[in-house]
Image (cartoon, rainbow, N blue to C red; front, top):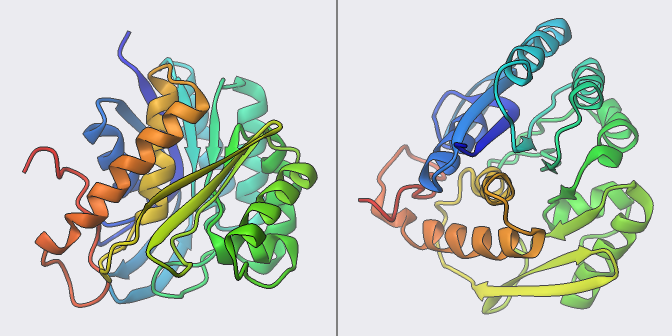
Amino acid sequence: MTPVALTIAGSDSSGGAGIQADLKSFAALGVYGASVITALTAQNTTGVSGIHPVPAAFVTAQIDAVFSDLAVGAVKIGMVAQVETIAAIADGLTRWAPRHVVLDPVMVATSGDRLLAAEAVDALKTRLFPLASLITPNLPEAAALLNEPIAASEADAERQAKRLLATTGCRAVLVKGGHGHGAESVDYLIDGDRSIALAAPRIATSNTHGTGCSLSSAIAAGLAKGEAMETAVRNAKAWITQAIAEADRFAVGHGHSPVHHFHKYY
């Protein structure tokens, strides 16, 4: 069977993040990608100028259309936009019960623009986190979810990852260290009672548009192919590190250019 992954996220009109980045990631890793669009955004590499949410009923229609026909091996959830959308996604996942759900709690874009309404954060925690196989917050998102300061050390990041696992109902947590400092970017995977530090060289580039979307999609791609959680995360971490390292070969836009999803091919 062809491995299939589904992204449920917002559209990035500039192609570097959101649905577009997710589908590129799936394709780069040999997985067929399907999509459910939750919102349209008017954005480019310098920022987001508008958000147009898709009606919740149509989000439901997209979910049912995909699951009724395709053998979805894993789901990636990105930008969910609003409370009604979260409810539609939660109901759809409960109805179709996919084996793997990777949830990237997209709250703020790389440009700094807020992508999730404040009132939707509680719905995200209560409705979607308990359905997730893995959540993938970065350091600012982890801190916001816990109402704590941003982790100032690797020990703080690991502690916050453990607290998220204990309080959200999800099955595993990956706190991403890309917003930290130091020569290495260290992510912490808390999977059950295991704490796994995943380090990679920190790459000096501003071309990181879509990094979080692409990493979570790469993990979902691995899970769709039958990889174990730790293997999928390790492989995705290695892939996104190289995609960031190759990003400066792109000259796209005047702000944060995207990572190079297809660095293996051109």
